Length: 417
Image (tube, rainbow, N blue to C red; front, top):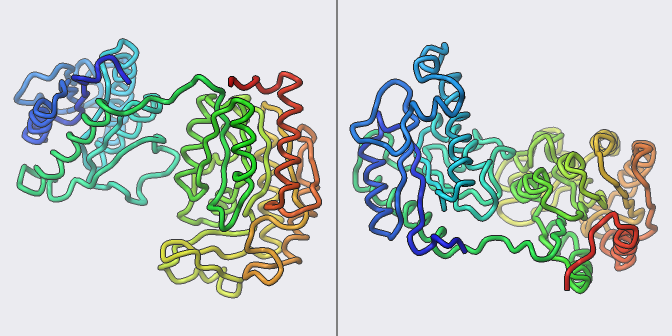
């Protein structure tokens, strides 16, 4: 917990020339909650009726330009992008100087665009709250969302304060102050292992691997590969925070390829490699595409086997040729890695529902994927075929054996018990 937690310093970011009433109300709530508001103005065309701690001129200077140059840049998009650059640089500097314990940003689509950049540069564990008119919207690409970002819809508050707006803003301010006071920062005492999976009704290897890795002195974080979980995994991997990864549910690669909203973005399966993190990879659930269970099936999937997991999410299998396409895509992504990679290929099945007598059983599709995957593995990757199902204990044992060998070779740091 931060030494400043009893009275956390909360950076309040917004356009004070158009939202001064809202921002000043937020500052008052933060004070009442026991925090210390620091006001950052990201206005472009005018000054707020109050004196911010960091003015629009300070923001422009942090972007190595002037507010006049930004205002005359040509359009509102380029102007706000420049302000985002300055706000991001200044916020990171303030955090590194120990002057920020949490941030809260207020905005419509323009302010949210800026907010996503600012939140992304701050480490996991620093409270980040965005009050937005487009919260939870599909307008927000998953690859721009920080792993621990909190959002609330700015309901009824686009222009001026009212009772609904005050309620929303006060909740947001209370939340960010509370998080800064009582949140626990990640503990880096033990090396962190990243693992991806779906729920245990579909994939089960984490039940065996997690306790075994913890016995060896590692901290294990299992990410739910339903879009945002994979995004959090990729964001943390991009910063090099994992000692090694068991990326065993790469279904989001298939989801993104087929245009599903259950996506982690175009760089799924790439960031650990860029960061030089040792990877043990397997194609868990790659034969499925997730869709909203409350939507009509896309026409491309109407003749394919379908499994409704719950009222929110369902899964449909891809065709044999579709699986070959995804296998080739996986190979292309793995070839970009600068890290050691072992690829485990379980030949008896990739998720629980593809077993005989289960709704997604498709031997022809599995054979097509296995055949193409063998061809697609790049020379830089070691292929390990495991003649078992991905949910069988033998699969997990094979993965753990590779991990232990890499620890013995010094590729992965030893755990701390």
